[in-house]
Image (cartoon, rainbow over all chains, first blue to last red):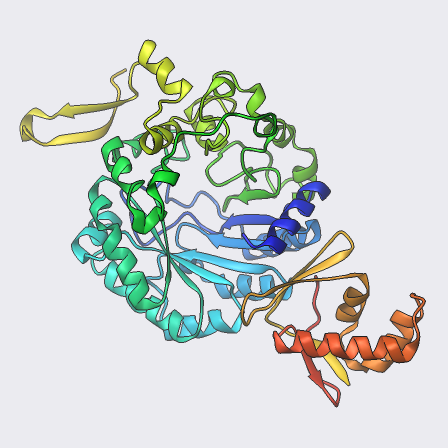
Length: 377
Length: 99
């Protein structure tokens, strides 16, 4: 983050301004990704009128960065009407899409709107691997073609590479592809539980040995020795540091108007169909609770060696059962990176809990291991 | 000189300052209170000299020639980053920002 942006973000925090918002316009999607955390059925999306009113409320509240995502945003027939209105309200607009429906005409319209960036999910440089994850034949080819259209318009494109077991070895190829296309590249090795609490997707996460190798790849982390160094001592400052921007300067609104601290933090704080955006932001008891979280108040984590550098996600902790508890996915990353187990992992080793995710061999197809099956009742 | 806000920028008032991002190159600017007044008054129809006289000299203790010189320099800088449009005649269809 640039110095000026950091300064503005700090100011927004002091002023209590929701500096950035993420708005999912739909959960419907033309891809059916194996790791997706959403229910793709339409349960009553906000109308164009409702979304425009929400945008007005967001602008009034001080939102500067506005990310439109989904689901697949190009499935909304009113997408460009919404984007036009967002431009009129002077947001810094960012888009997240699979880009399958972007052709030259759409790319030109996105350019005309002055969109700051378009983030596109690419899972592999190999069509068979990418398309097996999206379950949409030909999707890699169409997404790559869209990236070419967007780049031809001079737009900033970010290729987002979510890593899981089936594509863990392909990140180098995706990064090379991004370089060829003139796109930026980002990777994320975390598969989250589904928004309804189901942990069926978590079994797709790459294991510790894969993360261990990833964190030592100097083409990614530059200095592996430094990146994987033991954590520094926990200081008083780190005890009082904010865990992340969720609920502090950032928030999320679902296609149905539900207001959450973050897309990864499905704690309902209100609904913008029934309550003004700013009223929720300022007065929601749930958001006040989220804002009160500090490392020093967390049982277990406050005693953990990783306290000063931990990337603990309060949303993942919430989905694990306690927003003031550990996020095991982040504990595992800290362990893979440094070789030092977190307080949470040590406690689990001493008192192992029954796993929620079963790995079973189904007799009819013996030899095939299926993960993510629900635990027997 | 006439000035108008570009239609491809992001802008939001944060406290007393205006945060502006260029749609051309994503350069980020903060405008102080004086520059924010200029930016908000940039409707493409009011001459810059008139904006300075009414909105700047009227509110701040500054001489008109000095204020106008500073305003012209600021306008040229912002125009280079695509934040303002500058012209020697009125600018038709200038953006009416709701920032």
